[in-house]
Image 1: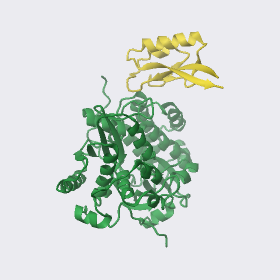
Image 2: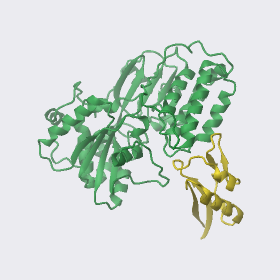
Image 3: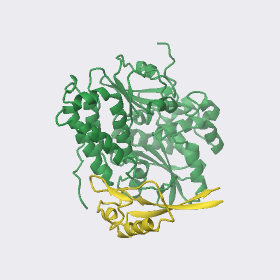
Length: 422
Length: 78
């Protein structure tokens, strides 16, 4: 295939190890006097890379309107999504680019500290970032101070309000925020929280400008996306412009089979039928199929696998990862996981199928965070993509692949307790 | 320019522990799901409906976890 696949921007000149500050400056240019203005940020049209695709300039403007004596910039590299590994990849190759982006945003906001949050099980990534911060310390740069914080690596720990709540009071619990936009606060200080990949892109915008940034990607989602691709027992990362057809992303990543279905966005994401491979990987192209890019995850389900069994595994994992704060999520997700398990085995599955969709309608929108909504989106798209399989399983005839090896990666959940009453 | 005022009940899902008092105090506005957590009527009710307003207030005050609030929605109509 002759598609110009990897437009390497934030993963440029990948060395297979984190670049030192000298190597970084040789590649990207000096970090002294690096700055960005709100106009350049707005012109670039950069959107958040963490999944919500919110315009970063709007976030910064909102924070600038709030009169705060202290402000903080938080880099979210938690990556609680089991199918994603892009932030780790980014911080293991160009850690200084992420720190550059955080530095220019901190200077724009007059913030005096930058907090990089990395899940505590990602030990090597923490070491890479700490080493990078130490290298910058020798330069006596004007600007914010950097620190690394390592919250526990639970799925919801990377949710922005849960992360900020952890920085405040050592609990990774999402918060109820009925009014939007809501200001995140550490103490009395305002917080700008962005994904690590967003920060890395801002590090490049500060050097090359907004127009350069818009030169690839789509009009509504300019720039590139680092996609985490899993399938065939492999986990790969490729950087492509938004709007690249999924087929060429997969072939570039060395997925040589025709997938049955694709899981896009992550375990709280959406399924896409395997026949829609020529759709571009950006939210506008995927919207007609009820799918989205999320955090840039593509899981390619091989032809010899059972969609129902995969869904059962993933939803069971997601149910255990609930923070158990809100009833509909704490009780509803395990109930849906039970339904899916019954369907996967084909035993007592008669009512499970109709109950699954009615429970989806009941639970939707009733959690403090979007964790249950993500699972429901996942289940609903699964019900339409694997409709035939679900009907077969419900009739008590599990498909021939029901016992084949599983594809989706489920992390070991050692510290999950049963639901406790206060 | 006319202003229409409507109300609806809003639940803080973190505070709510499924006591179910709201469904007893305002059955017209709140039903319970299979786990005993409230599902509140999504569409707001008009200010003129005093009976609904009264039971909504009872539900809000009767919640042992103080998880409910009565949200006033002011919409400008031209």
